[in-house]
Length: 436
Image (cartoon, rainbow, N blue to C red):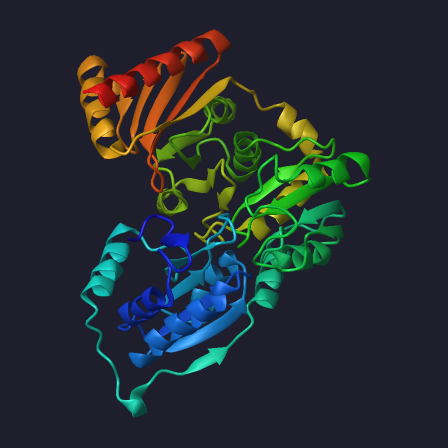
């Protein structure tokens, strides 16, 4: 029920008011819970249902209304609450919604906490209060405090920024950038959960208008968020939409010094590892998912965590991926030296990605794991998340999709022909496993 991104799926099917009510009741042993939502219309009823479940059990609910997910994550500590709930499907399309839970540290609920809540949801045996023991529900606005925190954290910078909010909840970024001295032109700034301006996920294809505005105008850089602004992607001043790996390398190099470590998921490009190694910075691999990156970022010596999908974590600030914070830090970096120059220093290696459909993805991956561990040196194999095999000149990774009947194949090398060869090896492993 609860994956690393909480519960997420189509409204009326996977995500319902009944489910939200049960999750609220499952949080009934807490004293105070913060809730917030992205602009999707279904978010109103889901917040109401979840808040009702909490209040039935005597829990006080602090309702932030429409708020970016990182605002919700930070507000758990600000409100001295025991948990936070973001009603959001993040970058998913408009028909979806979701429920994601947050700890006071800003980290999403980890595996044991998710299992605890899921068990309570399934048991559906809440400890309901009598009429005079119901929890209160009060409104609060944490956005201004989030803006102030960003302005206090990041150096002032006079940049011209085009901000594509994607009709989501990321307006906090505009306030923070203006507070830092930037000139901000917004795109798709009106919150609208049907996402009329562009699809919610900030991909190169979905952000062509942003890239064009930066390239043909006088802006120094462009910023794009998804529906709840936990993700941040960027366009350099020359109009190039930067890859997630390039952006990860640039942000990590700024956040870490020689001897430090940064946390990255197992599907991160080898180019990031090479780029940081030249600067004496070690990369620590994690499973894919911001909750895993956050857990690694909380360890001593790890100064930054990031995912190429656009999730960026500075553990000294919060363990929640904070797209607005990333936007502000990137603007400050561009003020020191243009982002395009920084990006040009990051190597680019050929990377191959494939999705293979199968209704038996778990069984296929188990057979792949058995074959790989038998045929390859144990030192070259990682089963941290899927199966990854490292070779001297590249690597390949096979992972079961968490939400679709797919096995995802990734292969990368410093040489195109070698990348193709590793891709073929990986595909052959999957094909053999499917036929058994």
